Amino acid sequence: MKSGVDVLNPGIPVFRTGIVRAMRRVVIVGYPGVELLDVACVSDTFDAANRYGANPSYGIEFTTLGAQPATSGSGLVLAGQHALERTKGPLDTLVVAGGFGHEQAAADPMLVAHVRRLARESRRVSSVCSGASVLAAAGLLDGRRCTTHWVVAPSLAERYPRVEVDPKPLYIKDGNVYTAAGVTSGLDLSLAFVEEDNGAEMARAVARALVTYLQRPGNQAQVSMYVQAPAPENSVVRKLVTHIAANLGEDLGATALADRAGVSERHLTRLFLDHIGRPPAKYVRETRTEAAARLLTSTPLPLSAIARRCGFGSAETLRQAFVGQYGIPPSRYRNLT
Image (tube, rainbow, N blue to C red; front, side, top):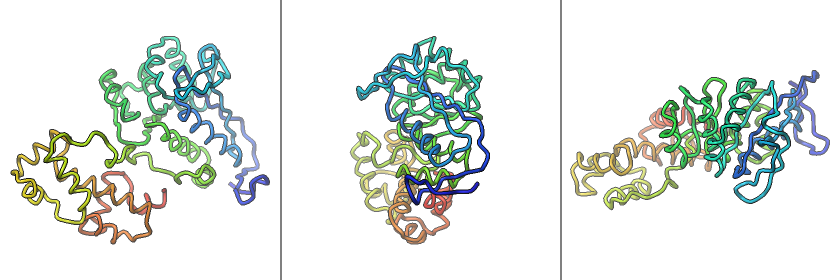
């Protein structure tokens, strides 16, 4: 693949193959209460790829039942370009957007039926955020692993027991079905599509044009441990969590933490399991690893210095923890972001 220069934006590469191929049809499904960002993250990423020479180019269609306008959660109105019930394949990519109206959309038998029909005529099927509810209602996630917005994940798992819901990753691929987590993770998924279709060089160019990460790995946690809510109700656990975050380089073993709290190690483990859902050692390891991830993307510190600052015995110990939590080594994580 050769690159040129965009005459309207000098310095930005345009990729050309010399052979113009048929267009890739991308159909985005909307409904009343759709999340505007869920739509825009997808449409604007593919549009940027077109401007940089995606071949085949992407043809983007926003569809609703009856081609009716869809009022987004923010109040802005999106015009339905095509009627969902009249849209026919073959399609390259089917995308169901999320939004506050996802439950009503998933309960609409006509909308669900047409999503199911189009899925059979699509090379790949995807959802952004709570749009996974519609895919689940259509039976497209049965027996599959998927993700969705962390707020929606518990109810999705309860409502559809045949679906394996994992609320942690930014996006998941299971066969030809892709699901993205909350809102802007649709951007990460769309960049992954561009890379899958056109290569890493173009995906990086599109990410630079959109002034976003180059690009976040799909298995990066969608919610930082530092902003998860609410804080533990138990005062002992709450104080220890605060202590752990502020003293990552110190001894945070079970004995040290139990002594600090004035409880037995067994009782400490019980408290953490009851109020955080994981034992102290696992919580400490996850917190240290996330702190290392933040330093990797915000500082030029070498891995050995980050390991010391975050309480890991060595760079290798940090690498092992990082691969276990994010699925990639820290060096690759730094390059991607």
